[in-house]
Image (cartoon, rainbow over all chains, first blue to last red; front, side, top):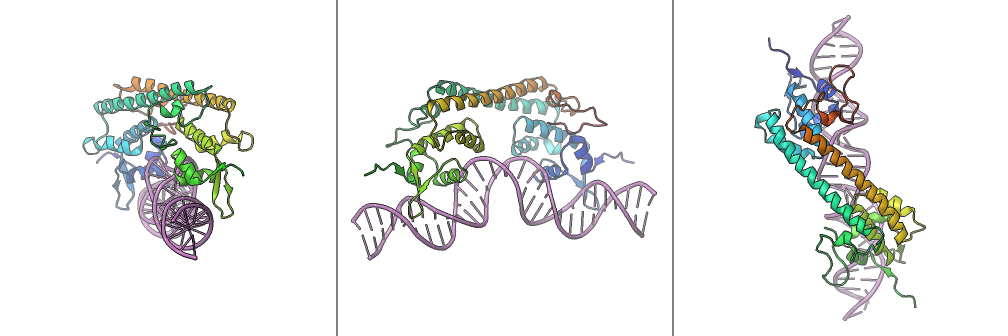
Length: 146
Length: 146
DNA sequence: GTGCAACCTCAACCTAACTTGAGATCAAGC
DNA sequence: GCTTGATCTCAAGTTAGGTTGAGGTTGCAC
């Protein structure tokens, strides 16, 4: 007799805190795969709890579902992420967090220069011009924000 | 003869780089107000260029249109932001940027602890448990992420 | 007085990440 | 074998910040 390695969608929902509708949505998006009973009900593997964990953590780190799917798709056939996978992926996540922080810090620095200036001028404001190739094409500022 | 203080929506679009459709959308949302000609065409004030600048900058700083509207609504009747307004508003923007950075830094710190751990466990992972009142209610983790 | 670009409204579409509801079926305890 | 809760599919709705298109006017120059 095979141990009951399979769980229902409701069970998976209870174990992860994710709504049933969301799990179906993830399946539709290819982030999860389910077997079907004779009566067409989904049956998940216990390891899918871990897979959902991964999705939740990655989401919390700011990855879009499509990106998460890409990461998961890189894993050999439906395998649950191992330690090595997780290390690779989490380093890449760290990288993107670093970039977000750097961008926000740049913005903050520019904003600081801008407080008390208040020119709000499309031609002069450093908030606009710092990295955009702005102005300088005909009269009046155009297509200012990249 | 009154100087032509009024500009068309196309002119406003050209001067700000914002699409005509977006300007109409902003008007609909209450961020801009327009006069109408006898033939029902919109006419904006020149000062609305400045108003749109403000919207663009605020957006770039990560404020939602609804928040921007609230800021603009605090100004006496359709007035364009003055230096004093801008100072107040930009300080509050700076505050929200600070918060975003702080949150990202916290996440990064937790992620660092987590790289090389790879447990991905809903019960043990620090990425989950750092600030959520998680676990500890019955068997299995539930409603884990706040 | 006409031609044409710019303008008008209104409805529908777009992405992301889901939720909600209707109507039908399944699984399991008693 | 029946009841009840869990599950199924499919369509539509949600929020944000718009864009696109159809079908119809306006306004200005020649």
